Length: 422
Ligand SMILES: Cc1ncc(COP(=O)(O)O)c(C=O)c1O
View 1 (cartoon, rainbow, N blue to C red):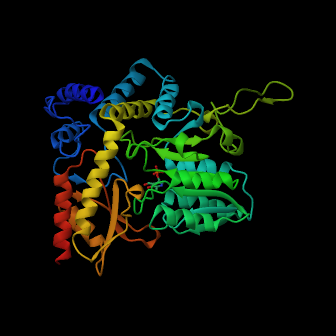
View 2: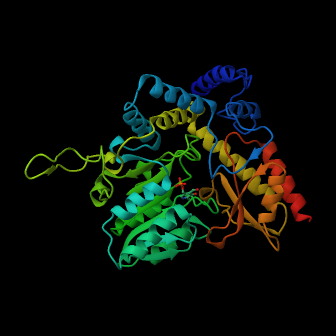
View 3: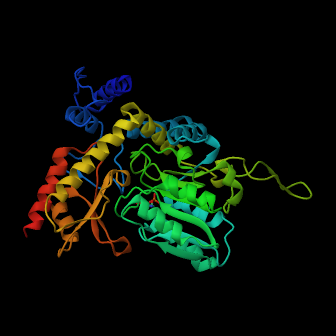
């Protein structure tokens, strides 16, 4: 309750600064107990974003909008850099904030610019040789498929594509059956970009560990959507970003490499920060070794103003409450899924119905119809959705964040209804 009060007080201050929103704390709103009914609280949350009121944004799986607090902090920091030449102070702070948010150690986090960069660091750093098997899935985004295809092309590793099941159990069974003595790595999306299915990652990583196989998760979506806990999952590697569900600055991400797995990932690119010392004047020349933390994988001048944005995005989510955010985004998505399912047998639901396998992304197709036309129709009505051509799945993906409302989901459902009748 006190978290929520802090958030509302700070939100009110910010709203004043930007002349948006006019929310008054209502002591009757017991939000933690009744999150679903308290639309006024979520309206206040929405007012913390500069989102175009004419648009309904339901493509949060591609990019999340940043709140004013993030944008403002980045702007201020940029001024500070240019006015006072302030630089080099935020690296440790942002790592600390991320490690706390992800429940892991600061030494295990590297800063990246996006998920794909993190995937490439591990993909090229692991000592894989021709014939070694890497398992990926039939639901990959280009950001995960492309690095592995490239390594397959250059190094001759074997890429084995495993089909996801409709349930957590089925998926686990499929992965387990695909393991052979040559399997070196299991690399799956935690939440695929296609259907939003939440994979049983803890079980997958345990399975990998017991079989002496590395586990690597493409974590483009979970950070800021669900309460991600890396220690609990127990993977070797996890690549995530801050520009989707975390609502942070664009072009920011992180790579987690578990401390006991760091020895396996060779830094391929090197620069300032990667090593513990060097001397070109001595004979022989000295290169002392790699930093004993995640800094061994990134280097050189960074845009620290964007780091400021990550820190503020984490603050923003923590002020609202992570469990509340997860409940809200799932509630909106579940409302959408249930209503779609009630629209008749033409709706082909691709997102699983079991609760452990779904979160805030719902994808579906419509029998005998080209669903990309529904996306065009929505776009003409200012509703932003995502057509998913990946892996020839060709479905429509809707992703709901905290600034969305039930009435926005209803507007989308009205478009589906009209489309079904055409
Ligand atoms: C599942 C998945 N993996 C990887 C990516 C690539 O992310 P980035 O653009 O941050 O590299 C995306 C982007 O949408 C994604 O959905």
